[in-house]
Image (cartoon, rainbow, N blue to C red; front, side, top):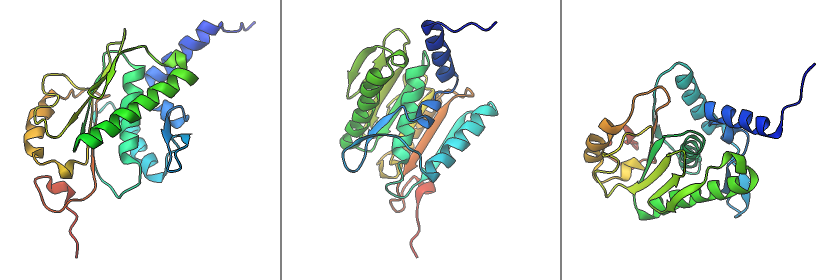
Amino acid sequence: MATELTDQEVIDKERAAYEADPIALIKRGYLKIRDKAAHLVSIQMNSTQKKIVDKIQARRLSGRPVFLFVLKARQLGISTLAQAITYAFTSQRPNITALDVADDMDGASYIFKMNELFYDRMAVEHPHLTPARLRSDEKRLEFAQTYSRIMIDTANNATAGRKFTLQLVHLSEVAFYRNFSEIRQALFPAISHNPDTIVILETTANGVNDVSSFYWKMK
């Protein structure tokens, strides 16, 4: 005869499921953003975002780290998706260190506010999946007890992240970095190469610079 699970057993089962696959938080609409009309809405992935998630999941299932380079058009939500992935993993798994690097202070502030909104709404709607905060400011979101953290910096700091071992890295608008080569040389040796490592570099085009992969030639 089957027995019903206790409330704690249900919570423990759900926590284990999201720890195994944090991206499910995004797929199930748990993470909230502000839309263009300033309404709070769940992230509903568009076709481009779904393709990126599918590639990430395929790499993870094959036991390989994820390194993605995305040349994007505007308003496709690539930066939002990358940040949602960062938040999902750091909030659901222990001992994760993530780094987000924006091209300028405005970009860094936007990333922080996105993380703040993710956290605040999760704390209200899904408190059992929301670890307590140890620290929260425009440089870092750090969780108590799990020791996971999201660090936020700008491309003006060429040594961002080099003192840490990183499992998640999001570099936003890299074609606008003035010193991408220097950042890459300092940062990439700090990145773990474990199966669940996820590195996302994304940008709109910005002519010819040292990020040659992101040159969009106009004819």
